[in-house]
Amino acid sequence: MANETGLDFSDQIISLENKYQQALKDLYTHLTPIQRVNIARHPNRPTFLDHVFNITDKFVELHGDRAGYDDPAIVTGIGTIDGRRFMFMGHQKGRNTKENIQRNFGMPTPHGYRKALRMMYYADHHGFPIVTFIDTPGAFADLKSEELGQGEAIAHNLRTMFGLKVPIVSIVMGEGGSGGALAIGCANKLLMLENAVFYVASPEACAAILWKTAKASPKAAEKLKITANELCKLQIADGIIPEPLGGAHADSHWTSEQIKKAILESMDELQTMGTEELLRHRMLKFRKIGGFQEGLPVDPERKVNMKRKEEPRPGLISDKVLQGEVNKLKEQIMKAKESSSIDMDQNGLIEKLQREINYEFSEAAKALGIEEKLSKMREEFAKAENGQLTSGQIENLENLKNEFNENLASAPNYGRLKYKLSLLKEITEAKIFAENYKKTLPLKAKVNEKFKEVLEKSTLKQKIENLKEEVEKSGASSIEEFDPELKEKVLEVREEVESEFVNALESSGVHVTSKIGQSSLSVVKAKVDELNAEINQIIQDVIESTPDLKSKIEMLKLEVAKDKNTPSKESKEKIEALQQQIKEGVADVMSSAAVKEKYEQLQAELAELSGGSDGSLIKEPTYA
Image 1: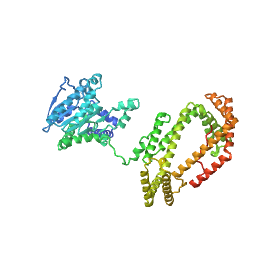
Image 2: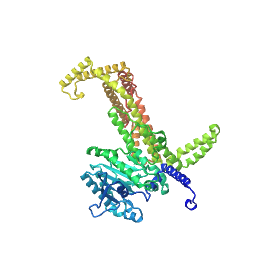
Image 3: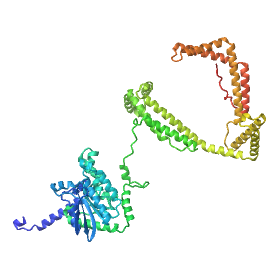
Image 4: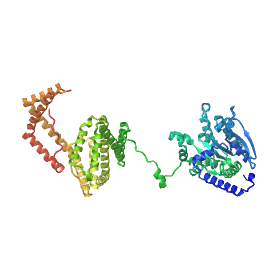
């Protein structure tokens, strides 16, 4: 317009250019992750060869994997920067469709990685530092590449790069996709251009997997943390190389100069390290990725957004797993008992079982049609004034409860419910046992301590030693073989030890409910057995001398034998009547004077020995 009209528009042009630069600056300083992905993929973005020719004084490309193929997607060669030799290798994309087809869109085949591997060995042998440039969507994943060992070629490169004795610097200049990028990216320093991205899966692929649509790629790009700034915060990238406003393609020479400067600074730092230090530096760079320290405070905002741990849904845990957990806990309790130390928490398993049982009750209520009635009842209760239930509502609730209890056995999941209730009972009993046993441990220790003190008393110690000598002289191997005099001495010493032991416990505040000792117990047991035998003999004699009672017993035996498997109702009634008549007859025998006299005599002896026992050691006699 200025040329046509001859007017001066220079001020307006300068103003527009300033506005454009300001708008450009505002845009490129607040780029979203998906916008940076698009800049990294820009078709005019400088390629590997563009940067290499800009930063090197001389560059000689080296071809071939020495196995009959030269992959154009990876370019390798030797070049010098300010007189210093380096081995360069990187992904090469094309400028247009024809070049991209020739370069396979920067996606290497196994031949490309094997070519890079050959150059790594070459650089390691001659001591050339290695500089790699990363710009690939990923390794080429066609059938032929898989047949030729794509995964093996990448894995071989990863392993080899960790053992190279020369410094390695990697620069992500565009997009670094998955293992295809990592195969030449195991470096001491990983630098990224400002608008480059480095990812394990592209935002589109991630969105398709998680949200079932590639349209969610902006959200995926944000969540993946793939930009240079985010990766530096995560300590995956070691530095950011600045780009001009508008991206690297706006001024490729200036970008190349920044890359050159970053390479020389990194190499100056790495070349001061010895071989061992260099290898350790490379190893630690990757070892620290994903590391975290427990106990550090978590940022409150981040903590709020953390996903809560989900409890396993009830009903999905198999009965076998539940039984296994119960058995495992019982084994732990038994092992802990053997070591006299029980310290475990059974509450977690009890809560899990209770959730399972509640779920089974809920399923049973659904199957029996109770849940629907309960929901209606809840709605009625919600409408109740002041939250108070009427007598009619309480009665309806009780009726519903009774209906559920009566029909529960017919629910399809009743077997599972019953099984889980039995498991809960088992674990609850185990918990009570563990708690009770834990309470007794201090008392047990105190009792053992007092018993040792009693045995260390000089008078008792001497008596026990003398008794041992007498037993050895007698040559008897068990107490049954002792002569009456020696047996009496053993019982006397035992009773004295028990008496002293009980007194020591009482003096220390431990109340002993019964002072009956082991020796006294054996005497009582013998007398009880003797009385039981006499009573049984008396009953047998009475039965033999009473034809009526004997015939009833014989009839009972015949009746039981006749309908052993499936007794009829009439047979059951007959058996019960005979049993009642026989018991009445035996009760008459038990009330006889001879039996009563022997029973009272034994009770008196037992009371004298045990300090007031009620004679509960006497067994109920067995009847013929």
